[in-house]
Image (cartoon, rainbow over all chains, first blue to last red):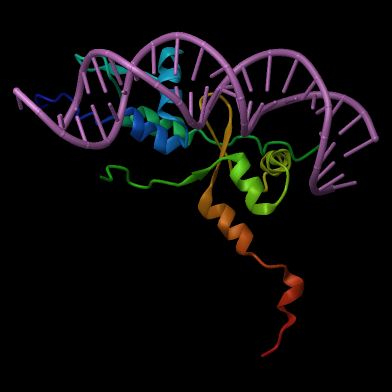
Length: 69
Length: 69
DNA sequence: TGTTATTTGGGTAATTCGGGTG
DNA sequence: CCTGTCCGAATTACCCAAATAA
């Protein structure tokens, strides 16, 4: 173990927004709604865990389950 | 800077619809039918992979392939 | 210490969702 | 079978000025 604990990479609102193809303001909305964990800087700006963002992005389409009508 | 292993460029329903000259609703139907992969925002809106859309756009109809050289 | 880009916050228009219909 | 449109509800995008980050 290091002083960093587990080298968690943090992403800025702009980075997360770019990955989801949404506005940075929308990412803030998700954080406020509790859909995304957010870490605050001492000045109040939000940072997001890359691992969590990637997990959310990976939970993509799951709708091709209906073959039979 | 790229701290992202594989950044996939995503398109909005309106952008895909514009490229195919169809209604955004039709693109949604394609996604539901499993003809197009879709990533969901945390709010439930769909995003589409630009690479996949372009591949589909580039796929000319088989009927035209009878050109002999 | 100063500059530039990003983020924050609130408010309003546009887009998308889902189901149902033609 | 495939597509376009109507509806209501929810989500997202863009406007501003001030504060924070690098």
